[in-house]
Length: 86
Image (cartoon, rainbow, N blue to C red; front, top):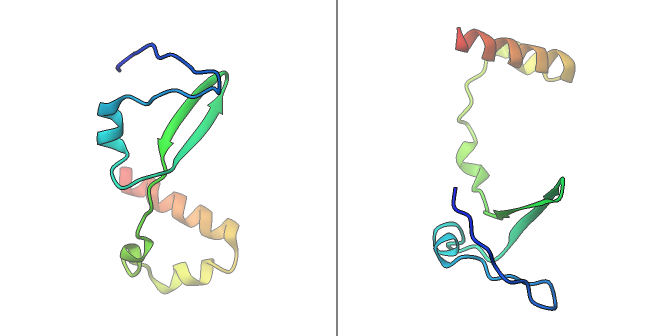
């Protein structure tokens, strides 16, 4: 963890550290700011190519039938994850 003290100007602005900007803000011009208990988290808003995940999930017909009932589907998925960790 790196800690720095930065000045805040009269309009509430700060300059983000150069090394963080170079590392985290490549091709990104927006950030997400999350306030949590008096702490601000600055997260780069990155675009994800969701299409690359299409057809990447293997499933069987039982899974498709469970999609009709979200609670049943969720139980099935959680059970599968628990079985994978054993």
